[in-house]
Image (cartoon, rainbow, N blue to C red; front, top):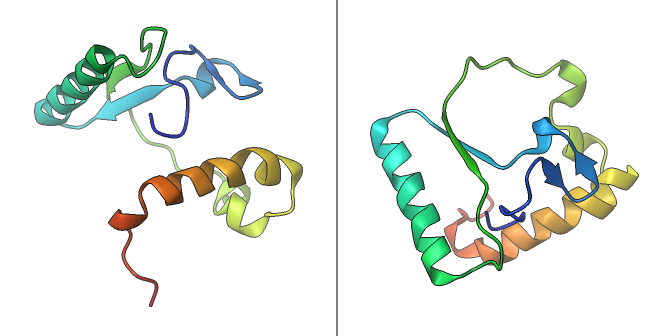
Length: 105
């Protein structure tokens, strides 16, 4: 919820559709509780003007993406989508959570 707007259903920037929805998948009841608690805390704090619409669902069956999707941003940094959508989000994430990264070796 730090790099996207969790109040907009089925959309991220110009990408629209259910595949772009805000969702948290949980493995355990503890993870579900943590997510519910976090969303309630954010709502109470009034972080956004609109209500959070992020879905909370059990982890579904996982399917590995096709090879051409693997490491896409790393392999295609000059593609328009990567430059204008992914890169700014990644920079925002890195800045906000830099203290949680391990030092590069």
